[in-house]
Length: 77
Image 1 (cartoon, one colour):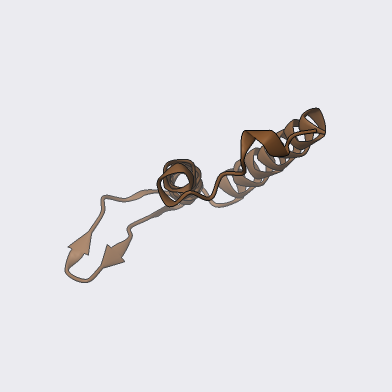
Image 2: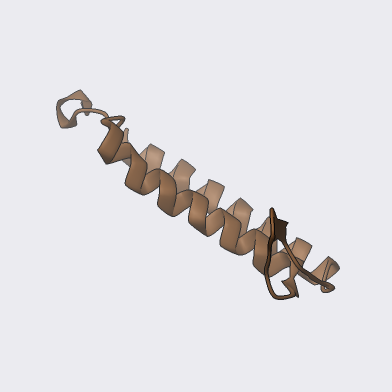
């Protein structure tokens, strides 16, 4: 069962990488993000999306052990 979960995870990551690359090719115009009084430098839209996904994955990977959301190791059959 664990190998199936790994396969599903790999497929999801592959779809995300494909979607980001497609968006990056179609939207090469630089954008600047604005939040309150702060503004970033102009970056390509695909790069902004890639950084956002990367921060989301890392944030989730860090938050799960801290919040105790990981399943127990004994649940694996």
